[in-house]
Length: 302
Image (cartoon, rainbow, N blue to C red; front, top):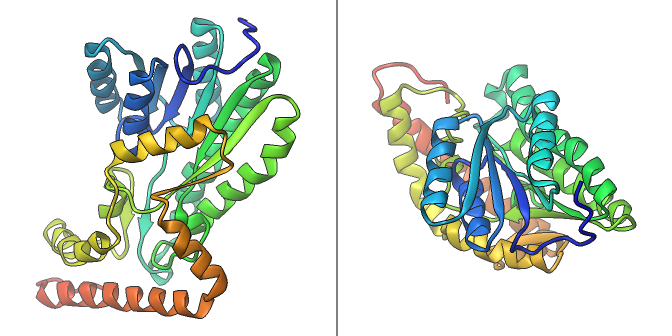
């Protein structure tokens, strides 16, 4: 292994990005490549990941795509091993893959909890378990785990997602001082609202509860879109640029857009106010769902 004693930021670096085919992962991959890193896009959506990698290569960047299920440690470990074998180093491991189960807990099945935890919590720990030993041997590296503002504040109607993201924040902050002694960095990304597939149904592998017929689901998302828009979703490309600047500075908790820090501190100083706002959001969502149910020819639980 190339023991080049120092992490590369970002020219000449080698980075793995799980969930690299779309959303934040896609934006990070393209921005890292633009800054001179060799990127490996790991995703279940291999055709889409290949498209992103090809687009990067068409602009003279270095990129490859690998089909990986982050819930399977053996698959993630093979990904890390093959990347290190090819490039002789690993500077960044972005544990970013995610899904969303969106809806009230009363509509959950046990399998819904397990699916979210498997992708978000086990997916991250699998990435850490595979990449961290490599970085320890090198004496450098940066683990970047994608959590969410939902991992810092209460987020009703996405309770399993919020629970998992709190776990990722806890993992990252606990590991950071341990890793620092060995020259390895750990950061946690806590995006506010970013314009990605997860804010409209959880993405390809996500789920809306209760399940709706396709036309009614589209109508539902159309009704609550103004709620998302009031939170000023950030373009993922702008998010990637801002996040990478903070990663280069080895920030521990990276909140982008930065104005979400105000919401975080408000939740600490005025918890009653934030709870009131959260209750109003739940009521608005329930009304939208009830409106869609009232227009449907089929009964929809609300």
